[in-house]
Image 1 (cartoon, rainbow, N blue to C red):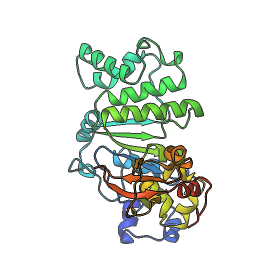
Image 2 (tube, rainbow, N blue to C red):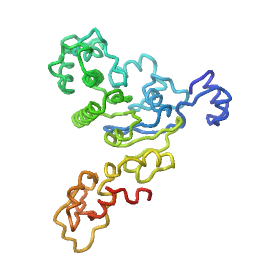
Image 3 (cartoon, helix red, strand yellow):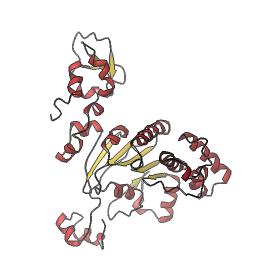
Image 4 (tube, one colour):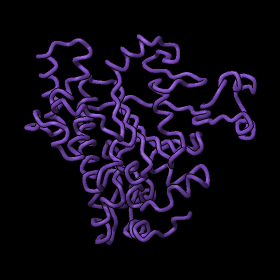
Amino acid sequence: MFGNNAEDFLAAHNFTPTDEQLADAGLIAAVRNANLAVVKGEIFVIMGLSGSGKSTLVRCMSRLIEPTAGRVIFDKHDLSQASEKELIEIRRHKMGMVFQHFALLPHLTVLRNVAFPLEIQGIDRRTCEQRAQEIIEIVGLKGRENYYPRELSGGQQQRVGIARSLAVEPEIWFLDEPFSALDPLIRREMQDEFLRLQNMLQKTIVFITHDFDEAIRLADRIAIMKDGDIIQIGSPEDLVIQPATKYVAEFTKDIPRAKVLSARAIMTPPKDGDTLTNSVPADTKVQDLAAQLVDSQTGVAVTDEDGSTIGHLSRQSVIDVLVGKNNDS
């Protein structure tokens, strides 16, 4: 909460003040009743419109903003009880952060920018540069080690910011709208790069965005926020198929379902005597199997991770998704 005497106010109202009581006290509840768990190795996207509280929430996770109440558990430790010295060490060694504004040091080269967080840990210069060079190659900037930020494109500058945050080999990686300032084509390229890096590094990631297209492309799970509250948490498919509120339904209604729905979501039970020669994995998105199904007269089998048939997918069911039929069901 933002405002004077927020802690005393919360305690006086049993930590459940009404909107009217908040307004009368001149306080803003930027995040409230937020309860979530991020699973190791997943990309957890937090999204919402401007002012929904998503950036405040991610800053509370690292205590860049002090939570007025509640707990933040990281690696079995309650960060709300950590000393400033302990927090500094955790941020230096276990957390990586990338924000919308790159905040590169203009007087340092790419190599020195990436090495900077290692240098402030007291690591010797040779080791810093060796590690920085490895990360620079991972993010695709080999050959630009001696460039200055002003000599790079926006997308290249963002890669430097990403490389700098990865240099400390963080256990959890916070990214707050890192691509929103980029042109659409560069943004798409950076999303591709981000997914490539995650495939290589398998980080635990909390990613903030207001763009649902970006969210469904990147996320394992999504939390949708409104007025400081988390309205619903689920996979992109869950949010589209089973929106918890009218707000979530409105938020997701214009998303092409073929991008989100999987074969599992629209299959029918397998039929006795089926002799389908073709099959698709259950998690395949409709847009990725459309060409195969549109020309099929018999449909395809849907298989699980073990290769066992768990359903049948017809040509018509795919066409229905592509043309938007039953989107309101």
